[in-house]
Every structure is written in structure tokens, then in C-alpha cells.
Image (cartoon, rainbow, N blue to C red):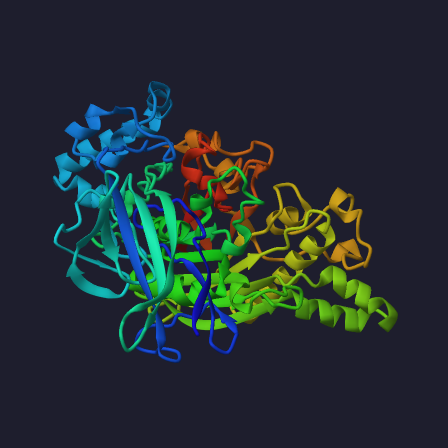
Length: 591
């Protein structure tokens, strides 16, 4: 007979707006074990699974601290109440908690006041969040007391199923998944799974249940401060649809989103488990990406299943077309769907897709070893070079024009390279070889067409390293310390480590500009020795720059670069699990 072996949740702390998906392990009548669902529409030997979710409400009212959600609140900000900010954001566990959070907390007051002055709809505009389907959901309103919906279950009357010991259990869902609402804040949820006989609808055996911790409100994101340059700001050039309206200009975003398979408590032990969970992170990532309104988006560490099931369909709703290249899997031995890769999205009303090139560094390694090494040395060489990294190169055609009357019919093409270079710090030769291989491929494209280029990605290389020098300077000093370790001879002769693409870093170009509004403020966010950002990656163990956007200076001009922050609290809202903590965003103009 069908039986339930195990039930558990990836995280026991539920968050408003983040879908809960329990792990249910079953034993089929034939003794095989599976996690597949068995709905009443497809019973197995006359039995199916029935799920229920309950909200446990105590007679004693409990408020949860908005900063430390595991703590009970002891004070409330009356300014939030007056400003009609969602009440969950007004609670704090101690005076010190409120004082420490004030700099961030006061932003809620300022934003609420600003929204009231502008349109009077602050709660919907400011505190709406993306739920699991990507639509905006207000956290401040109350769910209906007479009906409910969750998962794929249709509306049905809410039911009080049990009352004992000062507790009341409200049935809130009848599907396997459940998305907590604002009404659940401060309450414990209970998940119940039981085998039911299909004919009689009577449960068979005992019910398997899980109790969660108290539901917490989703933390407010830290505000992003954009630095205007020469009076140009992102928001200042948005049209009524939220897009840049200047003819011939476009914005580019590069972001390593941190693959879910790498977002583990072992690697990020200082982050709470709920902040590492994919249902929580994906809604924040989507909100962040969409919020920048970039015309071109280059993402790294995108799992193939997340691309197909989440990013592609959700960003399509916002007008984006996506292209994807998954890493090769000669090294990776896990589930194929969780292999990550590079995804490039572009606005369909701004660009059209012309051509796609896929760079597999494993294939390049195989070709090099076949032509350069004897058979006895190939296995050792491939073990060092095979790291599964890839690059995605996309040629786009602009649907806007910056051409004069003398070239009215000339196509405006743009080549966008998106890559994620090998992460291992003891393989500096492999990093440099991968970057050199990519640049050689781009040179071939440039030779076949006069085309502007963008080179974006996570290069896992700090400013001043050999890969960065090759990208930014077009060559590597033969005495560079990164060249000392080259056991395979893949970097010899060192004179070959050059390229002819006129690449310039989007941020380092600030050093060559004069005086202007915001320039000095921006320069303070740059390393004066390299003219690159002080950091694009912020974790407990490393703060530095690994991510870049390069552009060909002979065909593109940079109008601004944005999103550099210095005062990031690495403990705020569990944000440090995001590998690309500082996103790179800049605006180019076709020449």
C-alpha cells in the first residue's frame, strides 16, 4: 500500500510571499521510493495523498521583530503607524534594535511620505512584492476571512478545525504548497499529509505533520543609491513605461545571482536558512533585476531548471527575450537540471536577436591538447583545463537608430559576450587561458564585421590580475606574477597574450573624465590604483571586485555607471548570500 516515509521543509522559518514546498518521500505498493505526487485524480492502487495547511492562532497576541524575526517584539514605532506603513515593519525587539536599525528604518518613513505626496498610494507602490508567480502582492492588506486560495486549490470556505488549550487551528490551504500571507505573521503553520482511500475518502493510517516556526514578514530590501554623472541619472531618463527614452542609448546589467546549489549553510553559515532558500531569493532577484529596467541583462550562475521554469517566463512578462548556455558537465556529476550557466536577456522592443555563439572552454582545451601535447600528457592536462566554464555570445540588432541622414539604412548591430570564468584561485593559468580564448573568439567576430562589443560577466579575477590586465590593457606584462605558474605551457609564449579589441572598463573610464555632478562621489567608490569598484562581491570572507562590464571605446560611449555602494551592512536581511551583491549597471551609446 502507498505510505509516507518522510516529510520535511527546506527551511522551518516561513516568510510572507515565499512559497513553502514540503519534501514528501513515498513508498509505492511495489516498494519503490519516490517524491512524485499522488493526487486524487491519479490514485495508485486506490489510494492518493491529501494535503492540508493550518494556521495555529493563540489567544495571546504575539508580534515579531521586523529586524530579528526570531525574536518577539517589545516595542512599536508609532511613526510607522502614523505613516500607514505595514504594521509588521514597525515592531522591534529592543530599544537597541530600533536604534541600530534607524538609518535604514527611517527610509521607510521618507518613502511613505514621498509616495503620499506624489500619488497617495504608498502601500501598493512601495510595499508590494513579487510572489511565487511574479505578480505584485500587497503585504499590508488582510486576506479574506470567509474564503481563501493557495497553491492550485480553488476558493473554499475557511474552517476552524480544532480549538484546545487556548489555540485555534484555521485551515488555510489544501494543496501541497502554501504561500504565507500577511495574516500568518507571528503564527505557527502546520502541514499535514495523509494517505486517503480513493473510494471512501477516508484517511488510512496516521497523518504526517510538520510544525513551522512563526511566520515572519519579508525583510525590506536595502535602498540602492544611484550616482548621477554629468547630471545624467537612471531615473531621469525613463519614459512613461519605465524605459530609457534617449535615442541611441541603452543600459546593461551584469549580475551573478548565486546558483541555488551553491547557496548552502556550509558556505554561508552566517546567513539564516530562510534567507538562503530559493523561494525567498528568487522573488528578491526578480524584483531587483526588473527594478533596474536594463535593456540588456547578463546573468551568471543561472541553473538550467531555474532558467526554464522561472527566469525565462517571468522576464518574458516584463518584455524580455532570453538566451541561455548551460555549463558542460564533464566534471559535474549531480542532477543535470541543477547545472548552472549564463543567461542573456534583452528587451524585445529595443533589440532583436541576430546570432548566437556558444563558447565551451572544455572543447577549446580538447583542441589545444590534441594539437600541442603527446598522448601521455593529455589526461593530466585535461584534468587541469576541464572546468566546464562557458561563455554566451549574442549578436543583437538595435530597433532604435542613432544614424544620420547619410546612413539611413545601416543596421546597428551589437555583440554581447556573457561569461563566468573558473573560480579556483590556485588555477591562475586556467583563468587567464579562458579569458584569452574568449577574446580571440571575439576578435574573429570583430574581423568579420564592424560591430560594437560588450564583454560582461563574473571573471573571478581581481583588478590588477593577469586576466584583468589582458581585458583592460590588451596585454599582460611578461613579468606579471600570475604567469609564474604555467605547468602545461598554455600561456607560452607570453607574447601571444594580447588582443586588438579597444576594450575599456565601464567604471575605470571615470578616471579620465573631468569635473561634473556626481563624479567625485563616484570616484570615492573606486580603487584609486585600478580605477575599478572597491567591490562587486561582498561576503563574510571576501570583499572585492570580480565582475566587470567592458565595452569597445571606438564604437560605444559610456554615459553613466551606477550602483556602487560602500556602506552595505553585510548582516542586513541575509543579503550576503547574493554573490553579485553589487550589480554592475551602465549606459552606453552607439556611435
